[in-house]
Length: 485
Image (cartoon, rainbow, N blue to C red; front, side, top):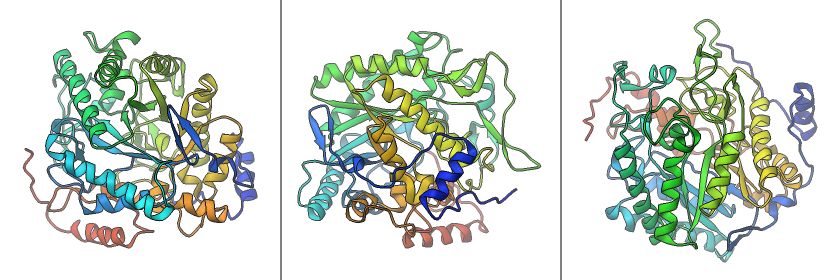
């Protein structure tokens, strides 16, 4: 596999020159100003235009409560200075957990989640004197075909089914006649989201995110053109679940509840690793393409935002006031969602310069923002830009291509990036995310006594440096057997 290094930019002019050479629409401002401005979100105002994306640490307890490392991560976010903390993916039902250490919101875990919110706010108040301009939310999820106990699929996708496992360790894939979730299953799940939303607000979260991204269940439903029944087929059927769920939440909680959604506006097609070059290449597909959301059916390598825009228009009718724009799948086309320098161990070498991926993120977020000027749009795709991420975000803010600039991997590496920006007017190059995917390697690693390694920034956080060394040592040992409850 090639080991070409992409990010070798010392100055803003260096990365500007690279953008010009690649002919991509990524621009940078010299001075930061707009990122420090407050943002009105429904009836709340946050203190700046910087945020933290939902970032899991795979470090909860086996019954779905926050663990010590979970609390540590949230405290660090709380004292980091970003005024939008978009809390991590939290399963609404046990069977929807992505891994055995993902958070789960249920009656038994409410106190521990309330403690997590409180600790985050205390950390912010201690550092900044007040938390009145801080917004803390929780992402509600169901992992669908990526649920760790067993895949729960919305429909059969021939290419993706080939990478959907009943037993990944032994290479056992789902069969062609594997059952899909029934309409009754989905209708019951709508009610589970309502209960989860009610609990999230009860324990002190300021907003909820009904997650529709990264090819988990609700995102998969949006592309379920071949699904039979009322939750598939045409646009009305494919959006039925999210419309029903938002309507039920709004009916249960009233108009004051702040509802958001992290939404894939472009799923793309699956990629695989070329056996000779190691570069990611699209899996062969037929035209017109019958799967995925936000794609051009005659060329699914390109986005078509007609349906995502129509969905956002519908969600706004249910009072959704903030949309976090994302794309792709971390499982089969990771370069779309997370432009990277180095892929995870089970990945492929990027088929495009990461700046091309950054530009794609900026383009689609800008199109959404320009279609809905009064919608709070949270932008993605910044982490690969390292110390220049806020300079790009500043340009996007000034040109009304986004409302809030947020980072995910970047915040894992550098949780106080926002406070450093306020103090210094720039980020420290020695603390930024390197986009080398060690955190993802930890997320994918199951070879320990809990069936899941905790994930964090290996180069920037000594706790995870030690965890990574433990992982490397464990690979020479037999894999433990874990019973799935």
